[in-house]
Amino acid sequence: MNKVSVYGSFTQALFFSGVIAIPKYLLTHYTEIGLSDAEMMVLIQILCEAETNPYPSIATLAGRMTASPADIEEVVGRLVERKFLAIERYWNSSEQKWSNSYSLVGLIDELAELWAIERSQQLEEERSLKQSQSSPQPTSTAINSSAENLVRTFEQELGRLLTRLECENLDRWLSSNYSEELIIEALRRGVSAGIRNFRYLDSILREWEKKGLRTRAEIEAEDAYFQSRQEKKATKSKSQTPKTTSNKYEKFYL
Image (cartoon, rainbow, N blue to C red; front, side, top):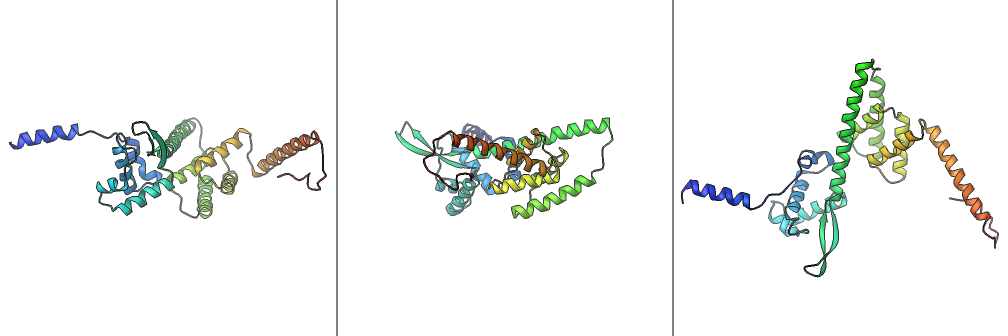
């Protein structure tokens, strides 16, 4: 068989061996959501097996890479811990038993959040451009100073350096006229709730904006009003229930 025939046969076999569809957005943005090259390669190998084997073994994954099974197991563990990957149970009708499968829903959620932030920034830039064309813009010195203060505060509270995307998120909030005081208050409440996701903080700020709350004092007044209404409802409910015993703590509610 001559060289041309071998090359032609190989080319045909290469493309008929199958292809794997990997979203371009994932390949171009995986580092921005915190994935390493090794983690991305493991995800690609899992996608490669998804159609025929939804739960490839560690040995299978390691056999296609230069990493050891122990290294692959550690990478998969990190992906599961960070919720990029999940292990789910499903009923295997062909084998009549419960089996495991990998789910990439968490990875898709992270990419969706990144895409939404980028899209929001794009729309904000377009709006700012239109405003700059119609009226002079105020100096950005105050915004830059607030951004620097916020970065320091967030890094101290979170105990780590912020990513470029997170810094851009802070800039976007300031450009949307959320005050430094309001953003720090949202962070404080997120940390208190054990949720440090920027998407969660964004939802807090948007909710305050809908209610027209612009300062911490206004937010605390709203909280006090809400708590008062809850206590009144609880008191009314108790008054409608026949009392059988007296308790000196009955007027205290959490």
